Picture 1 (cartoon, one colour):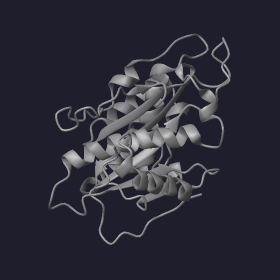
Picture 2 (picture 1 turned 180 degrees about the vertical axis):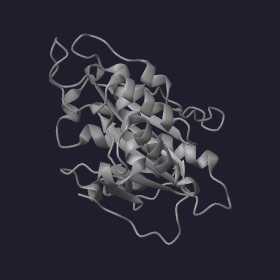
Picture 3 (picture 1 turned 60 degrees about the vertical axis):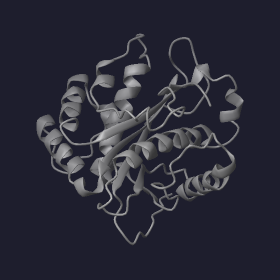
Picture 4 (picture 1 turned 90 degrees about the vertical axis):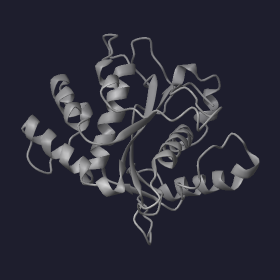
Length: 255
């Protein structure tokens, strides 16, 4: 279910968010069943550079021989097409942030399978923390409202109002909980919306980033991965000096 906000001033940043992998915990020795990895990624652009993902998709479609407005899905492309697609994406000014969860390493999987979207929401929290740090460091005083619009690829079964409510709950708890490190000066729980993957170029970029990371980590039925995808996106580096004690590994196995 999609939800949108009605802001008075355009946001300084747009973070397009998509995932790859599933949230299940049923693993098989043949690499079947649930995926070992769950990846949630954000492709972050300045609001003043909103044409960048559109330009990247236009070039990618041309390179791949696809018609205008064709919705690209990284997972359905052949390897050589994926590399060509990524090569066009990284030409644009953007940064990516990814949370990569190795599910077999989680000690208490029941915690994350006790209800719908529990793992997804926790991964969102970790991702939004890092996106908030990134944008707080790079915002400009004279550019728009200083905040981030969070644009999710719409999952039909999920209520994004509940995700906004979850962020509001975290904001309320933050003064008394040091583990909640979202920079609320750039995050407003109301500034969340969900849009179909095919409708926004930014979401197709986020899909490529998330899926590229996934295929670089999750073994295929032949036991192989493709690490080249992991090296291509421009991954953010949040300043250690500005955020002492807050930098955690990108590859996570639990809270």
